Image (cartoon, rainbow, N blue to C red; front, top):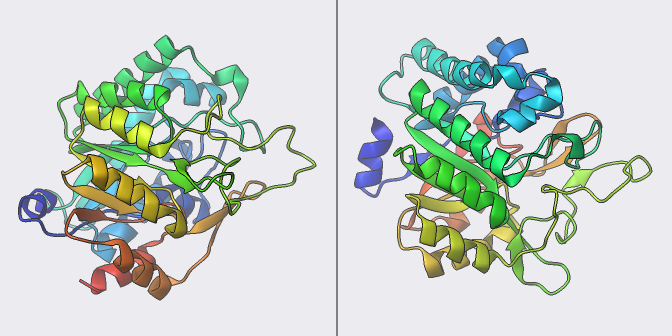
Length: 328
């Protein structure tokens, strides 16, 4: 695999972009389980998104498994198909590699997250599908082991925001023995300018477009909606383990402090893949806030020797990444 050689040689590794936002852009099915349903209902679109990122020059593509834990799929009444969703997503990534003649060159990452199924038309976890911590842990272990058995090369933990849920996910990933890359999201707390785990209530610039008349409560990522110091999250997780740490699903302006905190507590390789969109909850549209050149220029301001893995999150297309890769 190319990424292994690059990692050992301290070269830059290019990860893909916003799979979910690109699937939505091409007409894939979005639901309270984000883009998970598209693996079953729009497989050609999922494959096309992977192919676009491969052709842009990415070394790693991420299977469409961000929101495929059993408790998330329960919102679609398809929890009994959890294994099929996970293995099917990996197979679609593998099909894209074959179509692009990149087998054994481009790696496949399995995505795992603390994403909870959302209320219909609201970015709020649906209380009907929030499991106990014990069941949540079991569901993460099931997902991690299924991804391993499906043949992914890496497990990427995405959008970690807290300590309690993140620990469950990290431990589930580590027990597989696969390389585990830990992606955290943060923001500058508008109340006191500290760096905290990403939180809609705390972020200075709103990243969601939504009708406040429809929403019955403040948008949130996690059921508890706690505002947690980012340094506390990093200290806890790095003491547990992992092979790579980094910032993802985070605005450029919020990334400086988060990256510095990771560097203060982590000496290993790092990754950085920011988001560049505002999300319209009514249309599921990701509205990009910068063009390809602006994205590349902004990324270059952050990248140093320790940050080896570079990509994009929501709103980042294959064209954004192609422009960035050209700079190297």
